Image 1: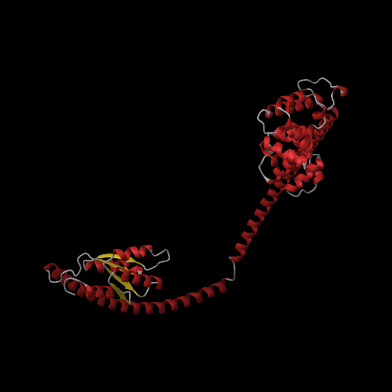
Image 2: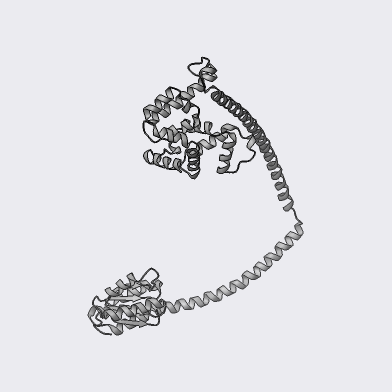
Length: 402
């Protein structure tokens, strides 16, 4: 409990740095020093199930963890919590020390830091103090240089005496691990190349086989078409003759029906032409009488609103209303999208004509209520025909002859 309280106090003073904000080589070094192969396999198993673990090289497992820890996710948070618990003592020590003291102890190769090198790396990397980044870079760079010197690839390849360096066993172990990973990587690359070459050969064989099958299929289709085109000629001709006779009879009867329909249509056309002539004469007479003032317009710009009815007759409704001298407005009587537009249309009107058919019950009741509240004259029509609209408007016309 005391250690937990101390850590909570230290976190309050120095908030922890998040693992997913660290640099690549810092994360690589933390994974390599804090987890063995078994630990890395267990962690990867939490990401997704792993089959044939022994066949997976170390560097692939390492890569998987490195990629996942770069993201802010539950997995990286769990790994960070695990490292905080594992190295809590070192974290407590580092947070109590100043930056200068940490740097001095590292340069002096203090055993308390060097003996717990993984904990020291995590404590420095996860510390949120800005100046600690310089210490982090210096520590990681020095560790990399030590590794390079041990394998003879660094700028200084002088041998290091075991008695003068307390980290030699640890670094030798890491070098051996890296060498094994390098060898595993090379073997994996060779296997992948062989697998790729094998797949290329298989694809080539498959393409050759596909070409052969295409040629055979084309040949078989030609033979089938040839065989289908040579049935018994006599049977084929008989069938064709039977079909032609049946078609001639059908067309003959159809021709008679069409002739009768044509005769009836001719009579109807003549009758319609006669009616059209009579109507034209009546219209001309009406126009002349209106021009002479015998039939004054029964409305003088009143707004007539038609609600409901058939939408396809909207244009005919408009012609009738405007021919009587009124302004026209139409609403289909649907209130599925709300009653606002219907309310506005009724309020703008002078006369409301509502069809009791082709209108919803809710819209009909709402129109009655609006007209009653606003004292608008409401006229109900049972049928939706244009003539009914014209007759009713002539009946209620306020001016002229009705």
